[in-house]
Length: 131
Image (cartoon, rainbow, N blue to C red; front, side):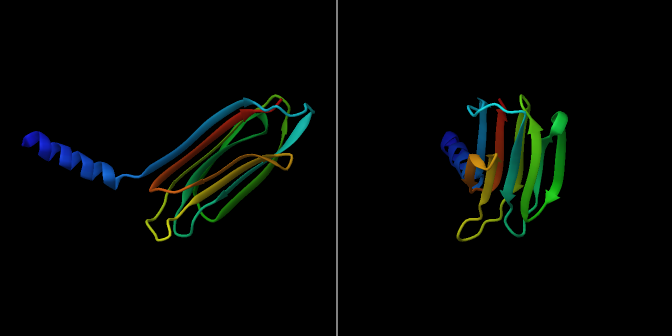
């Protein structure tokens, strides 16, 4: 009987948690090599929430935007061979229809990652290397 009560308690707690994680490392992009690329990071943070956004800039400098709200759009020119990383962490409110996090990464105007995620705690991770 105790095992049944513990199992019920664990399932109730687990049902209350809603985590969504997207974690992708694409390695080197298969696009023509050139000296520099235009990389665009985009995220649409739902109203009433704040996200932590991390991205890599020129020279592998890491930038962190704490408590970011609204639409995030950053265009950066990066050299060939650079590692690129973009992360977004946000806790979404419970709404009907469900709140969602939309994220995009473009290289020279072409989408290399496009994700729409729902859930309570959403984590987006995307990495790649420019040729």
